[in-house]
Image 1: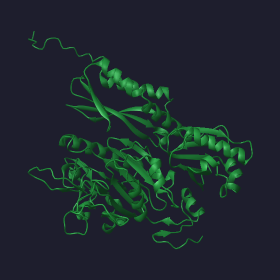
Image 2 (image 1 turned 180 degrees about the horizontal axis):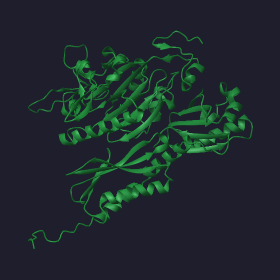
Image 3 (image 1 turned 45 degrees about the vertical axis):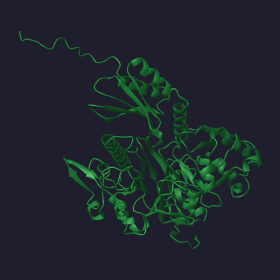
Image 4 (image 1 turned 120 degrees about the horizontal axis):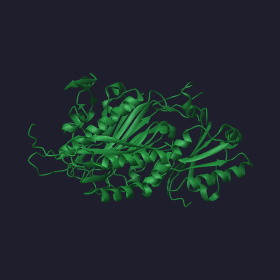
Length: 301
Length: 236
């Protein structure tokens, strides 16, 4: 059948049965999936979230600290939109997940331990595991407790990977840790490295245990030498060591998905609908939005 | 005879450690739900500070696991701390108070609703419906889901429309969310001529607050899916 010309989509005549729906409805099948993650800081930001989803053509939307009733958010997300968002998994999940994929395309695997894990069966390409976490603030937890959370989350992710029979995993969220901290980069933590080349090795053996790598592209967004802000969250602790800006909101990608990931598709969002999310000093403006900035990234199938 | 400075050590296990207690309750859950939803204890951390998670597991839903709470104790069984993620944690110094708190959590509406939802959704994906024209309405949120089955084998399309609406209302016990209606082939085949038209204009009162879309897919058990997304307050 003929598909109307639209960017980033293809028409498939022989898609898997599950996705006949796309052909039957005469819609285009997206060849890339756009993800967005945002910690809303318990603010009623439904209009901004909907605008972000529309503006960036988001397929999968993940929200932490969202107190917006799902119905209210869906109302905004789906207002005048032909491809409807649905909520997947419990609304009580640590990170709420909305997507424009059919309900059957997102299957819940686990909720709890500060992480929700889903299996995302995209319309084309192979299925992926999608883990989204929101770890407690370091203000309320010891470094030891933080490390324990990380180890348990990794164990849950690896259990999901074993269950799914692959390691095509995306892991994102508000980790309340920077990419250079032990829980994120340590072998017993998320084991997320800054270099694709190193991540492509797949794993390394530490203390006789094989530890799989994640690639952490957020390293590329640190500092001033880019057009975006130096991080996703600003907090001056006044401690002896104070980085002020923090990259708490991150996406980690397993090496097996890296061929479909372009660094240029990763961004820290600072404007939505022409409206800045920053103060005049360039800090996240929590009076009009959240104290965290959203991140978006894409995966090509 | 060798000198014994140890005294007599009682090596009998503690009669009821917190772990024993939650293990028994995990076992109970399987009995209560005919093993549709299982209780499972997961060791998150071992000595010197133990942490055990109490999980609900739904084998029919690809083993979906929901962490209800976790307990934490030292080498001694008490004090023990119960933590509900992102909500609260409390410390108990003896078995009796621990059991009271555990009972409160296990018998809470939140927990019961979760179990009910998981049971209903598990049933929905398990073959064995007795009517080929049965229609299921489930919400996709396991924490609030309910399953309603409506026999739509009789009646014209208007009658069926009313049945569908009633199923949606009963399944939908929260103020907003989604309801999936799943139809068996016979039902779908009867409805298909109307699907692209006004069939799902369920009623004037519902129309304003229910958006819907109907998708057809190939499935050995279900041939049609109608997804209702209820956005905004809907008083059922």
